[in-house]
Structures are given as C-alpha cells and as structure tokens.
Amino acid sequence: MAMIVVPVTTTCPKCGKSVVQKPGDGRPEVYCGIPCRRLAEYEIKRVQRAIVNAEDEQKEWRQRADLGMHDDLVGQPGLSARKADWYAGEVARLEARLRELVGG
Image (tube, rainbow, N blue to C red):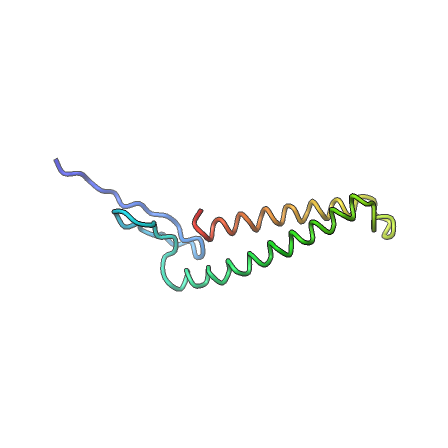
C-alpha cells in the first residue's frame, strides 16, 4: 500500500505567502524566498536595536518610579510607572515579532 504524503505549508512571516515544506530531514523553510529572507534579516536587526532601546527606557522609567522622581515636577502622579509599564509592553511586542521573524 502506497503512503500518501501531504505537503505541509507554513506562512512566510515577512509577506504572508504560503511556504511549502520539502519532505525529508533538514531545517524547515521559514521564508518564501531570498528577498523575504533578506528583508527579514534587516528587520531582525532593527527589532533587536528597538528591544535594547525599549529595555533601557523601561529601566530608566522604573528607576524614576521607584524613586518617585519626575511625576511631581510635571503634575502627573504615576506617570513614571505608567511609562515603565508601557515600555514593558513594547519589549514584549517586539520580542514576539522577533520570534515570528526567526521562525519560532
């Protein structure tokens, strides 16, 4: 009895096109082609830099919140904590995008 092999498809994280996986051993294809892979490499570098910047901002605003700095000067109690929380969310969003781009 012959076994029927159904091709497995995934979605290119850069453009959204279908990516048909080749049967057999080896690493699965993540991108639909070289142009999308190159664009993703560039975006990965940008996202990594953005994560570092957001982490730095989060740390700075968290320190201000812990020390009670800045909020009274601008008349907005809790501003530093809200900013720190916003940057924490931004880090999580950027990390999720990075996971999409690297195929994980």
